[in-house]
Amino acid sequence: MTKLVRLDALRPDRTLVEEVASILRGGGLCAFPTETVYGLGADGYNPDAVVKIFNIKRRPPDNPLIMHVSSEEMFEDLTSDVPEIAYRLISLTWPGPLTLVVTKSERVPKEVSAGLPTVAVRCPGHPIPLELINVLGRPIAAPSANISGKPSPTNVNHVIEDLMGLVDVIVDGGETFFGVESTIVDVTTDPPTLLRPGPISVEDLIRITGTEVRIPPFAKGLSESDLALSPGVKYRHYSPNTTLYLIELDYYGDISRLANAVLRYADEFASNGLRVAVICSSETAEFYRVRGYDVVVLGSRNNLFEVAHNLFKVLRLCDSLGVHIAIAEGFNEVGLGLAIMNRLRKAARYRLTLTSP
Image 1 (cartoon, one colour):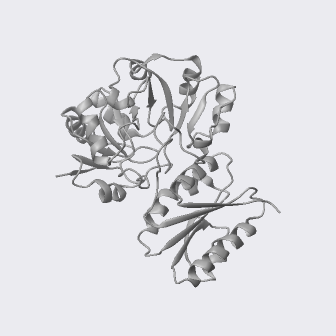
Image 2: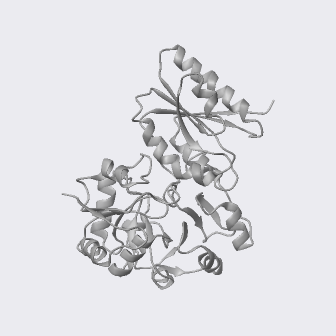
Image 3: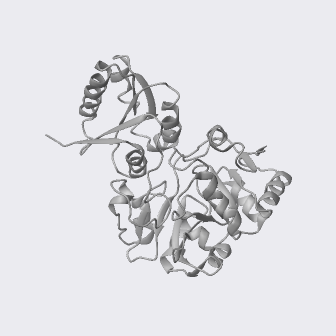
């Protein structure tokens, strides 16, 4: 039976946190909010508890987990080699939505790292997990708190939908702040390699480190990595049950072209008797409403934080609309747009890119 605990996101009750920590200390599993998405956590130094995460999520065993820490000292216990560039990033982004891939120490169970010589570590920028890690006194190993392949959860209802009855405790801390998972950067390479885009953008990384950042195709969602170097680089993720089409432009200076392309496809599906929903920006929503389509607005193209915050919620919403097809607009890959497009590409069953005339 799953226990549901409500905690204030800014001032978590210490007594309740200690209760949750005792469950983790005893080898149990806890779903909890972070600033990015909800995580499914276990004592990171307990291999048996970590294995439960893989079993419950139906997660491939070669897909490593992220170790969540609450201090630089705890981070240093997990790695045998910290490059200077890592400290530069830590000083300006932790606590926050940046995960560093570093050479692991002997303390890291192979179940956490999926047998790799590296480990992914971050210090979450949210009072609930920080307090929980502090009380536990050990890192928490955690992926997102969903069944593998589904959209990541950004509120407690998503977690209940996927994991109620499967985990020991679910902490309700309200909506997450960012709505997409942390940026993951491998600092064991020179230059650093972006493994998964997130709220800390490539532009941010370059400004902080003063060096270029390598961006492989899988970080854009254009392919899968042969090896799961970190979460989010190899397997299909974030997919709603509804068949999702993604329509992109190679240049987003004229979004009316994008809207017209979406309408062409929507009209074709509708003419074959299929019910269609359109996932779009607020700037183009009226194009589709006047044609009678189900319209789900992500937010404004001028506010990509709003778009990212709503993304997984909207993908889950599509499954409740009773439509056959969902067609999503693409976004410009600048700043947070790269993370949005990474998630949309991985979620989509089919993709179409329109080139400039």
